[in-house]
Amino acid sequence: MLKINNIFNSRFNCISVTFHTLIIFIISFNALSCKESSTFAQKVLYKESNSEKKPNIVFLLADDMGYGELGSYGQKIIRTPFLDSLASQGMRFTDFYAGTSVCSPSRAVLMTGLHTGHVTIRGNAGRINGSWNRVPLKKSEKTIGEMLQEAGYQTAMIGKWHLGVPEDISTWAKSRGFDYAVQEQWGTNNKGDEIDERVHWVNNNRDSVFYNYNNYKCLDEFRTNFALDYLDDKSTDKPFFLYMSYRIPHAHEFFLSETDLYADKIQEWPEIERRHAARITMLDSQIRRLFNKLIEIGELDNTLIIFSSDNGPHKENYHDDLFFKSSGGLKGKKRDMYEGGIRVPMIAYWKGKISKNAVSDHQATFYDVMPTLAEVANTTIPHRIDGISFMPELIGKPQKQHDFLYWEIQEGPSIEGFSQAVRKGKWKAVRRGDNYHTELYNLTEDLFEKNDISSQHPEIVEKANALFKSESEESEHFQYSGGVFR
Image 1 (cartoon, one colour):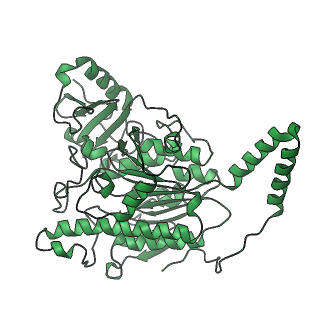
Image 2 (tube, one colour):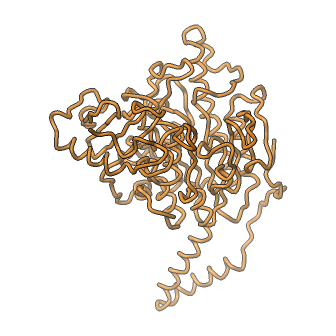
Image 3 (cartoon, helix red, strand yellow):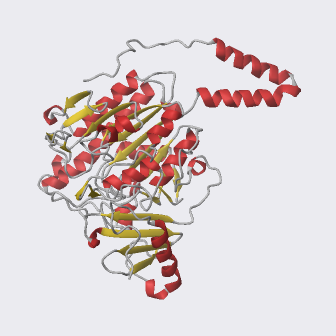
């Protein structure tokens, strides 16, 4: 397995007291005996504590995992014991939302703190250079990685990036705020050659490692090995940010090795469903490995861990999203603006900071992650964003609420691929570009969005339409941005 900068070949089992630490102790001692200097000493200690002991951050992102695919979110069949345990030891959000309902724009929202009416990427592809193709983030859209680099963090991204284009490595993760990046790629390179998506590129194209599926239980075992090596070899004198972008349970893993997980269901379930369940249980095991590594290297106590998914469950490659009730009964799936397409699981764990077995109904979303991590890292947000930090919610402090949450998506060049949604308190409005009608739901009374009550509340619909128009800035890549109204 490829090792990263193998400069740490031994473990240190003793703790050395540095001269700098001794000075802080002396200041603290003097402050206790001198009232006049007590305030100054506290300020110095606070400043030093923040500069030397910033928390590590691990963000774990599943690919197409539905709201109902974890036991802690109501799943009765698929086994996810570790993530369920993590939820019981931390906080589980009930009203957390992805950036939108498909991969690339949702991840763009996560990385920039901008919602899909403002961020560059609003679909898996857009109009660029005269054709319908992938759209990269603009360089002016700073990422979480870039923000945390400036705050003194060492940063790593492993897995699916999906925010660049294959022919331009300046759009790859290594060039967008990650000191260490291992990512898949697909499409054609700058020479016009087809890229094998099994190849994982290390630090842009400085190195590459081929994924041989015969040697691993699943692709995410292969990727987790990189993460474990990174945690072993990272610097010990700086905090770290690790963004683990997993593949599971996305429909199109190149190959999956044979597995005997859920072997007792072979006669009962279609094989595609057995493998779907098996892969989610495999992901649970890989996250357990990562957690155990944090314990082994002594970093767990000072690490915030967040787990979520980039959008709702898929219905692709013959998988039926209703077989395991992957959305938890919510209406819709991947690419839909209904709750099943955008409401996702979110678990936060931070030993000693987040209360055990906590459940939050705070309405939060991907564009809140950047300001939250900025507050965790005690740094400034790099540009105008749409998010609100949910750090207070995590640690039991008064939490500021959103006036509304906004989403849009453009899948394909036709008007049928454009949809918008807004949530304002209990109200949820959905508008598809091809029908010129705004649907309205009361989520408090109708969580599964069965009854469109728009005709009963024209004043609420009018407010939603105003948001659909104002929040969607026009984009050269997405012709229906700005909303579709007669």
